[in-house]
Amino acid sequence: MTPDKIKFGTDGWRAIIAQDYTVYNVARVSHALAKWLLQGSSRPCVVIGHDCRFGGRLFADTAAQVLCAQGLKVLMADGFVSTPMVSLGVLQHQAQQGVVITASHNPPSYNGYKLKGAHGGPSNPADIAAVEALIEDEIILPTTTLEEFEQQGLLEWVDLEREYFDYLQGKFDFKKLNESTFKLAYDAMYGAGQNIIRQVLPGAVLLRCDNNPGFHGQAPEPIDKNLQPLANTLRHTPELKMGLATDGDADRIGLYDEDGNFVDAHHILLLLIHYLARYKKMSGKVAIAFSVTDRVKRMAEAYGLPVEVTPIGFKYISEIMTREDVLVGGEESGGIAVKGHIPERDGIFDGLLIYEFMRETGKTLKELVAEVYEVVGNFVYDRADLHIENSKKEAIIRTAMDGGYSRFGSYEFDRTENIDGMKYHLSNGGWVMLRASGTEPLLRIYAEGNSREETAHILQSVKQELGL
Figure 1 (cartoon, rainbow, N blue to C red):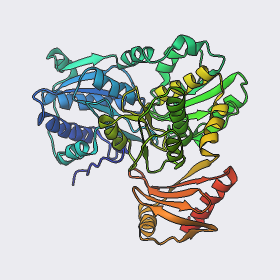
Figure 2: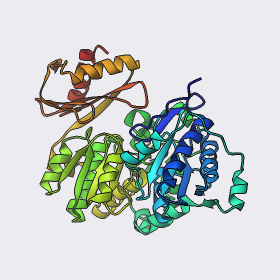
Figure 3: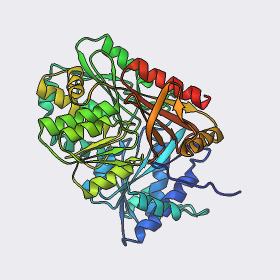
């Protein structure tokens, strides 16, 4: 039987548990990682953590065993942790690498393997490719136990959540935040952010903050359709002025205003740029993924900030942050990093920063979004995720790349871009983008219009044109 081909996508390797995501395949990846690290150091150190997902501890133990067997020092998180906790741990412990066992926002049947660089963020694309190229078809699994490696000094247990808590204490005035008249609700989506919020904001209203490795059957992605319990809580609790949600490994963010209206990642990016540039007088480049609204460019121009657009995958943004002065970097999917923090997506940190923005200005989230609209104009974004066969998905993308679509219903476009997927700039000022998921049989249609009704109509028109 031919071994599974292991391929890293935009954010790590992900596969279905017990189908392709197995102990043996995790060991193969870890063995390749050890070989790659040993090329540059005689005794590299690796920080390992896992989130709340099913099998996390088993797969983390496997990675640790394989790395220790190759002579590497492993610092292992005791209990589930968020991805940003691992990235921060790599930086603080001066390790050469981080490994996070997580499939992020993917459905509960998946697990995954993320690589984190010594800089405290996603490993750069070249390093990931180098590890992937070293994955062997067959390896021998180690028989030495973790207890034995611990006795040999190759394995050490670390409290990454405590270290992250201490770090946050130096970044935010939690006394002020906890005295705020603006009360906050938090939805962990059964993910790894649940414990840290209890510690830093003990007065927050908590939803889905218990350990459920199957996420109650729902993909832990912080988008509006998955967060209706949080939305309804905001609508029926007048004292709550902000709803914060994070995904399975707590590196992505979603927000709700006091009326229970979803505030998507495009708006969060704009809010963070607005706060840091206008209120805090900070500067730096804005780095955004291809699927982010052009309103970010409009705001950056208003504040005299340079902008760089990257392919989709936060690793590209993180790489820029390691060599340049970046104020805010982020993606449409809710992964955002800010200056003054590690070059890593962090839904908890971003949420606390927005909460601080409200506290410092005395304005609600709804009022702050209105401020953003004064700079860039009103807009509404939405996305349709269509689960279709890979052959159909690939055929649609080929047609798009070959210029096979000339309009979408009544919507004409005047230019296109194809940095990562195909983006159509509509004559009404909005845009449409088609992109295939690299980890699932999924076609994503992104759309922006000038009103909720127009955006919905754009999406419907695109689906009809594609025959979906």
